[in-house]
Image 1 (cartoon, helix red, strand yellow):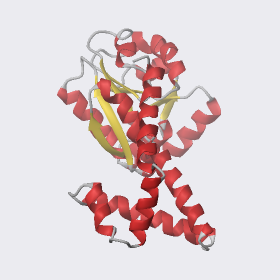
Image 2 (image 1 turned 45 degrees about the vertical axis):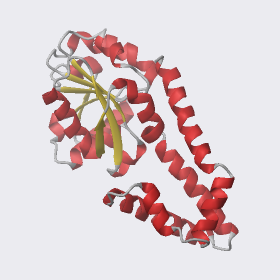
Image 3 (image 1 turned 120 degrees about the horizontal axis):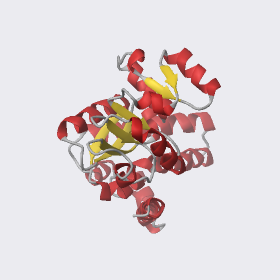
Image 4 (image 1 turned 60 degrees about the vertical axis):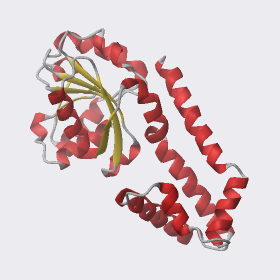
Length: 255
């Protein structure tokens, strides 16, 4: 996700010279310098003049990183955390007063500029600094601002959500093959159907249920499929899965 955002920042017109990256693996750091023209250095040096500090590491590495950089973060800076499950308080307790903290949950479609970010501001984050973070993340997709107590729900719906869509795509492709299509054609049909349906949903003011009803003629093929889905509890299975993801997110974050 770190390189995904870096690529998006550069593509959006931000000057590579204004971007400083800390990467502990030198071979990787050299690759980032060559590909994006950014500076690379150690964490403490990287944060010293930064207006926005992005923390894009594994959750178990956050405490050590924050302890290392805390004395060097400008009190006027904003720390943007993309570490899953790490609460805002973990940063605020370690950083100087005045440092704004924003917690964000991304998802993988940010790789193609179609990501979804759920962001939650900490107590020192005013509207101006929050707006700057939102503008930064919008280079990788869309942004929704939510209170931190809703981050587990965000994780369950959009953070894990792409996997649900891929799960559906797997089933549709396999079903197409079962019905006689070759796999390449089944995949093409599935990809474009999901792409088109998502675009239609995004462009419509109608609820998904209404869009579904328009495709579902009485006793037609779609009606047969939806009826079978209902008989197999597909709706409740999806709801249960999302609830399970939210519970697991809460467990991991200690909330």
